[in-house]
Image: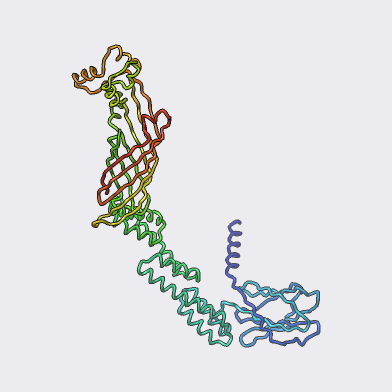
Length: 489
């Protein structure tokens, strides 16, 4: 039972969607008057043979009064008479023909009014007027995508006496435009310019979605475009991973020019490769060895571009760091020997001043490099840059403990004696196991300048130290100058 109901419903749906439409046109002659009774009006309805018979229903009348039906010049003519008056205000007439969707016409009739309506199939190609026949044949050719044939019919219809010049003018313009755009799209397709072809076919589909050739060709172009995008991007990535940047760049540019889905990734790769090329020409990377008071070992690495900001990182330290890492600080004589409470000779005092506490030190800094000027000198790039950034200074202050000093005092060693003993032992430093230590820190911003020519770079840094405690200032110092020389590549 369910299958039967479903089948009936399906058949009704197909029948509903297969119904054709009717078109009505008021062709009432000017000044026409009905010659019948004073309270009556006449409506003349005509239709082509293929739409006969017509049936009528009125919203105000129990029965529509069809007085006569005539056949005139290949059309059927129905003469209908209606009563008029206030009670018939808002009357509508439903016109039905087999195979067509019913048509509802509003009829506001006055007594003695004569009205003539022509009913037609707007898509019929036979049994209609010259203009309609040629226009409708042109429309059928248009839907099939045969724009040359459509234009022939449209232009023929312009010679008909009942031509609608505005309508046919629009149809001719659209057909001519479609023919031109489709030809351009086909040419782009033949040359594998799928991006352009897709855009042009999309315009065609907008103007005529019934053109199956255009729809199929558009889908084909999109598939070919996706395959080309996938192939070009994979080739580009392969070349990039193999560091063949010139070939990679060629394929990445194809991906972007074809407006592929991964164009943004290809664009990022292009920028990266172009920057690498530019950096290679500019010798933008600088690696330098640096030296300063208290820190004879230093290295700095940074990028110094011609036209954009770069960055750098620096590390500087002294060799005492390695002794501190082994927990073996070395002293010459105790710098806090004043705790002994005895006076020292000038010679001993000089020795103490020349040999301070054991002070391993490290400096870390990073920042930004800013281009100032660049040109070519002797066919080699030369440029100046400034750099600025924050930094950190750390210093471990190792001092002899009070017990060690007292032991020194008890033994009665003088600086001279102690030095003699060290020399005899072929040593230069004490290595006591009993000492005090303190970690001193400072925030050390810095600014500097770099001069770079060809493969050589010179670097000067000025550092200012803000000790984290006032008592650290005397040991850490307030400023430090650093010089460096390195290679640019």
